[in-house]
Length: 459
Image (cartoon, rainbow, N blue to C red; front, side, top):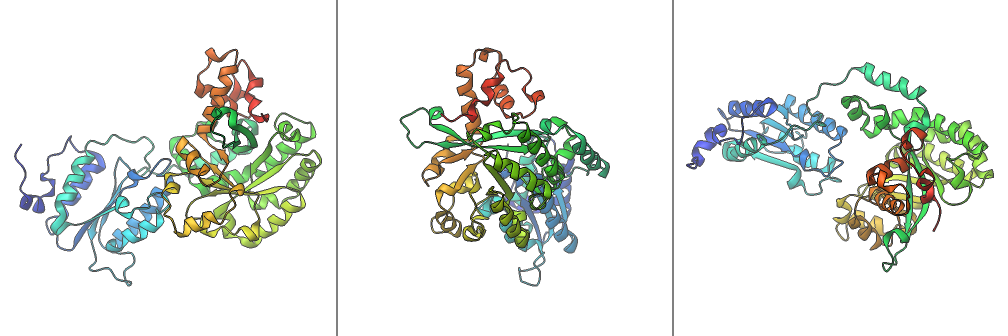
């Protein structure tokens, strides 16, 4: 096939042959670019490459926040925003002249804003945003449009999805108020890893804590509702409605020496729960934590780091309550950007749960995040979300020995299956899922349920 002359591309961006017929928003983008190219002077195309974010990103709130920024800029400066199947967002419009402080919302200034917003997920701004001046760089946009023809629809994409009715979220609120709580809870073990590499990995693991948390998977939510609840603040809203129910569940279990709290009562692994600040200040928490203290249960209470920062006074009051009730404070879900804001001296947390991502391994020596990480005693750090040996290697090189995440869940499941008399009836994934279930319905099919809890016993 003959090459298309560059001069022709500059006037007609759609001239690049597509790999497959364009449809949907990809065709809409092609048509928008063709219209703009009739008068390309002063026009730009900005692509926010959300498709380049590492899983679990892009999260639904990433897409919503980015869309708001781009739509606002498009409305102010005569542009158009298109969301594509691969979750990228494209803005085509006027660049509004040279960048200056008087036009912070101008499309030409958006790359710097977006780079700050997504720095935790894509530290390199050049990978996050492409900005092309269409008078001279139309070929780049044309090639990008042609590439999008090969993209497969993403069932989880919410870039252009119409919002679910408010009734759906109201129904979810009602369901959570009455659903059997154990069926909504899952558990995961935080493991202490012996640095001795001469022993098999499974033999080097000792339970340190058992985390209980909410999971909505069993409710089989409609896709858009599930995506909405993926927003951390909306998730916290629904979780907070269950905080008092969780506290009552633990109180009742402690009172009867039940299965949920028994391992912690025996001193085998601390019990780790996530609570909002208001729940910690409630009379129900005082009653439950007092009973836990009498039963010898090590109770670790995790507080989400960002909401804690929003109300420092309330956090200090909650901190005093935790001290009085003998509970340990855990700072939950701390990412590289948040490291610089951790104030150990003021909060004295028992544990800081650092969220694993490849960006941790990319922290530059001497950077603010690197200095903040070095200032934290490794004994107070746990790496959560550890999904590979790379995560363990990175953390161990910094003296971290406490881990939590899917990789360790798989190691424990594999170790159980080696010793299980019914292992041939199950898969590794089934064993892992049943061990994480708190309610009996999640363990249906296991012929050796006693072995599922063996990971709570110290080696």
